[in-house]
Length: 108
Image 1 (tube, rainbow, N blue to C red):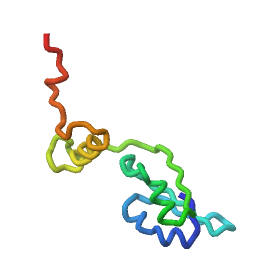
Image 2 (tube, helix red, strand yellow):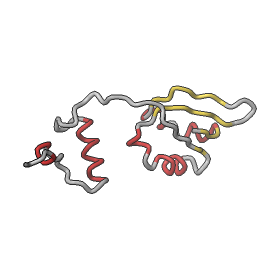
Image 3 (cartoon, one colour):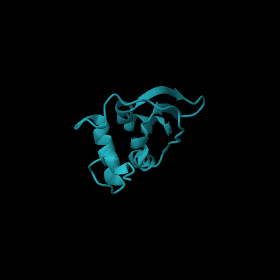
Image 4 (tube, rainbow, N blue to C red):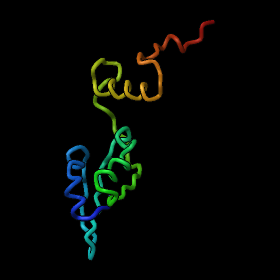
């Protein structure tokens, strides 16, 4: 993300939700470059949210960096992974219940 000094302070809540690993001012300018890890699921709508919060003066550029395993089981009700799967299924207009494996097996 690239933004001016005042805008970085205003959008400071961004730090609390994502892992910022580099924040530096570009020499000779009032601009800051901020690098952070953003989970893919949170990246949908991020650009518009960022621009709205900074009055269009921050510019995100998303680049894939790495995969990371979630620490919870998507089949365990109430877990973070299960909630993520449920949200994705709702967004894709699928049944909320995960389809049992038996429905995918050949029935000869």
